[in-house]
Length: 278
Image (cartoon, rainbow, N blue to C red; front, side, top):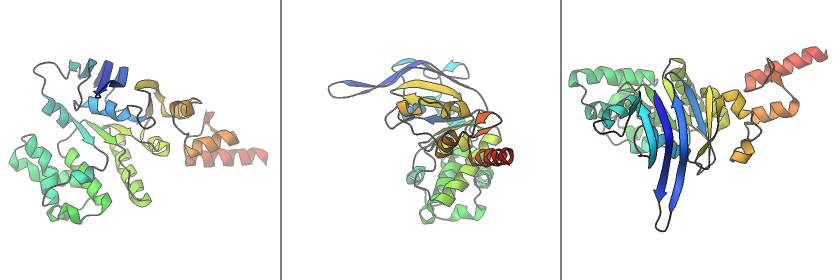
């Protein structure tokens, strides 16, 4: 669905230019769940902003369904309807007098018929697990988790084919964070293409089947989640291994002959070892 061909990007500075991306080649297929990780300043957020045309590369091409999104005549508004983007602290961008007004904003902006808007807002609220009665409330009276869900509902209302989330759980308490991750995981399981940037590798494990590492504006690694997060080079890319993966490595735990990836696999590996020891 999305392809980056030799994409480079630089931020202009008063006396120089900063290369944020260097010759990125990347293909994303329909239905994938992808985690993008990297240290602060690695270029991962800049990469995200290229995927739906919020930044234009200085070199190379960004293609969606085989077409260069920056060629003359390409409709970026339609592209942004198909590729939904949830920014960090997206709830800070809520502005409507009611939740309904905020969720319906994208529908109005994309010229959805007025007769269809009520149904789409109701469907979006259901998708994010909020009661329809909330649509008459002011978004500023909601909890942090509810605001995050309303922001997500505004994206889902226009039926995007791809969902991009930049640090989606930052600032949430543990319970709300867990509930939000379950919500995102359900979208990935339903076949929506999900791309998430996170500093929390345990979070990436829960959502992604494929992981891309960005380091110094380049793709340092790209592969299955277990393979990438068990890579010995993580520290050289400015990343710390997941705590559970690191524990498994120190204890020599494996599941089906592979390094463990999560708590469930760790428990199974420990129980299997205990049985053998007995």
